[in-house]
Structures are given as C-alpha cells and as structure tokens.
Length: 268
Ligand SMILES: [Zn+2]
Image (cartoon, rainbow, N blue to C red):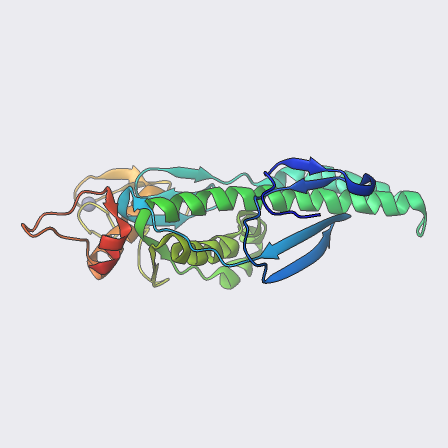
C-alpha cells in the first residue's frame, strides 16, 4: 500500500486496524521511519526533507513574555492562555489511580485500568503540546525578530510552590519549538539575558522600580504609565531586540512598513 498523497484526517482500515493520517505525505524519498507506542496506540512517523518558503511577516519584531496565568503575552497585545490541563485532570487521574489500586495485579482489568491512566496522561500532554504549537507557529510565522527571556527553568522548578504550574505550562518545550520554527519560517530568535529587568522597567520611559510577583499591573512612579505586568515585560523584551538587532530602515530614515518580506528584514 502506498501512503503518499493521502489526505489528512482520513481513516484507513486494513486488516481491521484503524489508521488515522494526520498529515499529507509528499512524493519525496523518505529518510527514516520511526515507529513508537504511546498509551496503547501505535505511531508511524516518516522523515523527509522539505524546502520551506519564507513568508511575509506582519510585524518586524515581537517580545514574548512567558508566564503561568497567561502562557505567552506578546508585545503586540496578543495573549495565549495557559490551558493548565494537568491541574484540571488531577482529580480524574487520582480517581483512576485509586481504582487501579483496588484491582488485582496481573489481571486483565488491572491492565485495562493502567492503560486508561496512560491515555489520560497522553491526552494532557497532547492538549498542552497542541496549545504550544499554535502559539509558537503564530509567533514565528508573523514576526521577523522574536525576543524571549532566557528563563532558568531548572532553577524555577526547584521552587516547590511553582514547580507544578511551571511544568504544566511547558516552558522548555515552548523555547525548543521557537528555536526550530524561527529557522523554519526565516525569523531571528533573540534570547535576552535572564538578568535583564524586563518586569521592573517601565516600557514607556525606562524607569526601574521593584515589582513583587503579586503586583499584576505596572504603575510607573516616574511617568504614571499604567500597563498589565506581562504586557509591559513583553514590550521591554521587544525594545531590547530593537536596540540590539535594529529595525530595517528605509533610505529616507523611516521605519519600513511592518508588512515586509522577512528576507529584507534578515538582511539588515
Ligand atoms: Zn514610566
């Protein structure tokens, strides 16, 4: 059976097995095939070379602030919510785990219950991954320069009060996706030093002031500028990227319109 040219979301049923095609397979030479098993389901992944065309970017640059309440706040005002899937599934998982403990080990019912728990974990991870993919694709597809803070994820995980929420947000995966998607879509990723005071600086006048974690709004003591804490941090990251990388400037000295092919932006 040939699999190339098959449309996605199509079910095949050879020999009684349900096969779901999630992506179109192109007519190219396959470099490797990976077969894996997750929570009782089998997956086949085909690897092949793809030449991606750089698209036109809607914005020259963007600052991305990662957080727990909102997964990512962009300096353009776009917010990607954190679905907090693990926290929502905790009750269900605990109930299924209790049922497992009541079953006799090495029995069919025990095996089925264990598989059900694995499927719940898989669903949690799939929802989280889907959400991260949507956010990172939007960011890399629409912005020529992407600025992100170099978060100390390991250090943050050692804080037991925050560890669960940080794992649930998936910061490490977010950064990993940004790295490869920036290359894929022809954007530039700027990783800002973790000591850069993005939360403590006013994005309007540059004044620095203390910002305890509980403060959700930045009220500048110098110029009176008032802005959501995460949006202010994202704007500062964007300002940092503009200052270090520079923006494309026209011959007359003005900024080039945002709807500019990224190729031109990258050459500046
Ligand atoms: Zn200010």
